[in-house]
Amino acid sequence: MQFMRERLVQTVQQFQDSTGEDSMTVLIERRDESMGVHKVGYDRKMGLLVDGEPPSLMWYVETEDFHPLQWGPTLLH
Image (cartoon, rainbow, N blue to C red; front, side, top):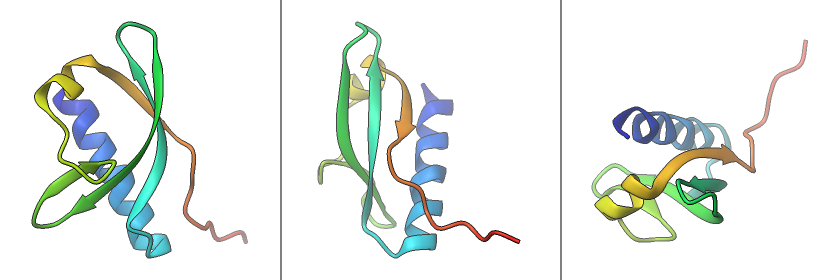
């Protein structure tokens, strides 16, 4: 659970740094095999925000993985 949270925070921070956007769209996989599309952001004062609210402990328990549906710009050589 902690690893997924850290990976999500890092992914969102990199997206914010490269695009200037407040949040990114991600697909969240839940342990019951359902999925949800959420806007996930990171605020230095509030921490991780899911759809504008801090995620609950249950959200982390139910969440198995995430997949970014947006990507920051890349530099091609």
